[in-house]
Length: 463
Image (cartoon, rainbow, N blue to C red):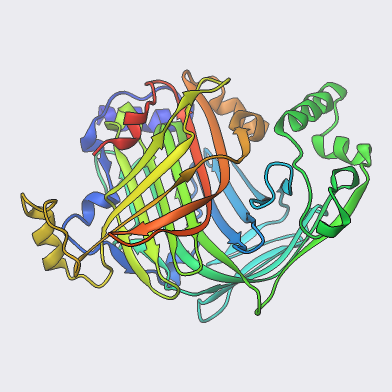
């Protein structure tokens, strides 16, 4: 009972948690050990949970045009702080991986007004995200920010997927009454059609020839300076931006039925404070002409025994080939950067899964065999490796400079919390067991949250 009380208090106050140990985390991977992890999503799996306690819930629609290099995401963030303050945000990123660091790199983040949830759908003033009745297509339309208007349709090419019947990891001594929860469901490979209308500064255009895909990022340092200046003047950041009256030029990106983009969609729920749930995150999605690979994992703080929870997905053009929970996301050639995190220069991600058609009994036999690693069972197992260099740092995000002041006031005093997100867009390769490599585009996010215990390369390679 004492630990439950401590957990409940820490979820509200942000104080450091005691060391509970592995008995106080109930991983989704543990519940599917020796079983087929892959389950297809239902319509109900895509409903917003929207509980009345501290949580952050997101719906993120990624898009990738392999030919042009244009990729990015449109995202809804819905958060509830201590059950007292609920808010919603539209965030948008677009980048051109083929053109390099000087090419298109636009980021916007816009507060939503009069938002509401209706099952799997989300609405706000000048924004709607709707799932059709057949649960095959999402329509995402937003006019809330003049710099990033989207009207995109995402249509499933493969089934949606999750790990097990309940794709959640629970924290606490009682899984029926947990004090924290993490949950993810996916549409791993989709077709994207529609249009994106953006505005970028005129001076940042490289040439008229590339007018439809050129642009340049507004740096985080500039955003922070603008914010500080606005606070000194007693004005909002939004008003400060309006007063600048920067000269902008319209750019247009279109995805058609004849030339669509590819997409990965993920719905995520984090029902506890970020620095209590995880000390680090790794995320990658990769699209080639023939396959998609997705890897999302987090590592808990020492409070929960540095437990790694990893979900990997491999698809063909129209089928989910494997959902794996035994993956190896390796940070390579790491070095400490100017803010103090040991940041990788290369990645190697190994998916060690079972084919989505493999029955439980075969999976159990391999999982429980003392010689299971000595021979590869081609009928049951599926191994793949995605790897590449992290050459293009899209942005290093100082999370504490981006979150609202209300949230910042709660977590800013927590010792050892220094959250940074490193976003990359690069050409990677995918290789199946003994097959040739195929090229594609990858979006990577490496997130460091807590330095309460040093995060090293080995932290990401725990069994």
